[in-house]
Amino acid sequence: MNYLVRLFLRSLVAAILMSSTGHAKTVNPTDPSGTWLTEDGRARIRLERCGAARDRLCGFIVWMKDPVDSRGQPFRDGFNPDPDKRARSLLGHQLIMGLMASSDGRFDGNIYNAEDGKFYSISLWRETSDRLKLKGCLIKLLCQTQTWTHTLDVQPGQLVGLTGDVGGPRADKEWVALPAPPTRAKAAAK
Image 1 (cartoon, rainbow, N blue to C red):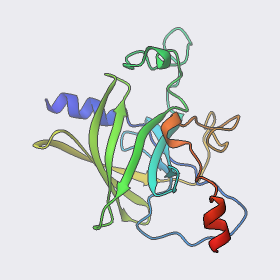
Image 2: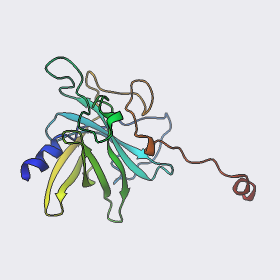
Image 3: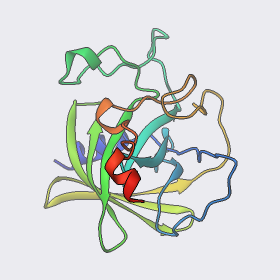
Image 4: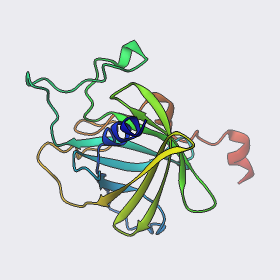
């Protein structure tokens, strides 16, 4: 079982490119948004706010140490339970699905493991400004924790575009929705 947990955590590819809008903004010290190098150095994961209210946290693979197989083809999501997603490249796909903030400064939810096509429970939190802890569990008693390192540099082959744009990762459709525009009644009341 420990092998499965390690395999699951290894599939978490690492680092998050902090997106910039050109406006200064305050970041909550517990907010894990940014680009993170996974503990094994095989990937970078970009964590960013997502969901209609931007109150969730999603993560995307934006760089892989080895993005292609022995034939020179990009690694694909071949074990995905959704047949329509099996041909997609692992580089750029979403693996952290709308984690919710908890009262203790952690974000809890699910992560997708492309190595077996399954979802697992995770909790993540900033340990320090440049260290992120990610605890993944196969079942509540079989858990393992990794430390990811915050990174600001860009590696060759890293996706640097905004999510959904050319040169950026692709969000799963359930997390891309922008907040709904206010209704006329709500707009008139303001």
